Image (tube, rainbow, N blue to C red; front, side):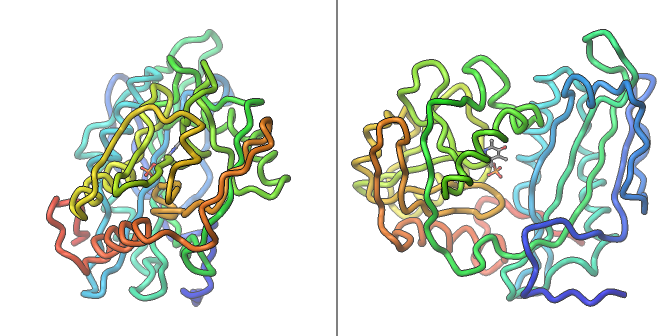
Length: 337
Ligand SMILES: *Cc1c(COP(=O)(O)O)cnc(C)c1O
């Protein structure tokens, strides 16, 4: 048995004991089963490989101070996966198969769940793809659902520190009436080049603008955007962003902390007025943003070298709920029993 050094975990892939699968064939989903093989035997004409019929989710399980293991808001991940499946015409999975698969993969890989106190967690990656052979452009009649887990370290190794973003009008992630609201692999393929450009220039991600007018903030790489000013949490309303479950949760917590919440278009120039800016998603919860470089306009927006006060409060409150250290008023956590 390998020894895992919980404090040294990175945010990468580590093999575990089993993955869990379920297959859709002849118009119905089969039984959920476990599998030791990390490889999948897929037909070369599978629509998932050719036409991008693929959707995924990302969530985490945490071992709390009380020793209990909690999965954060998996009902929301399920709803979003269902929506992604509908959006690209894939067979959608019933809740009982989803829940069974998630709980099974966690229990069967129990020894990989990081204990409380290292800032580490068990990352859960469900995915569905068209597995049936097809050459014409149409949806597959067969699908495969797979869930694997991998222990991951804290997103911020050096603590909760601001990163920098880059705005460029050279690339779009998703079109206004496109697939931006779905968690599908195709959106990620479309964002790889701009993401690489950002990293080459020393930024952690691209902050995408709306593809139509390039006037409003959309989201940043694989995370939603928010700004804070005058005790108000402001996050973009747009037809091309992915509805982040972390963002939804932060909006609830912001109200709980006595802040106002606004969901509306955010013009680029408004970046000048924010006291705090952050990116949010499952990986980091909040990634505070210290500066944003508008590349084409050669203008830099600055927010300081330390995480803002409100962002820190929101971050800690959400983490405490995930770890079972604070009352879960909204029934966000699912116990693994
Ligand atoms: C997954 C994802 C997010 C973050 O969503 P969470 O549910 O908070 O993890 C944000 N933007 C994009 C494009 C994503 O794919």
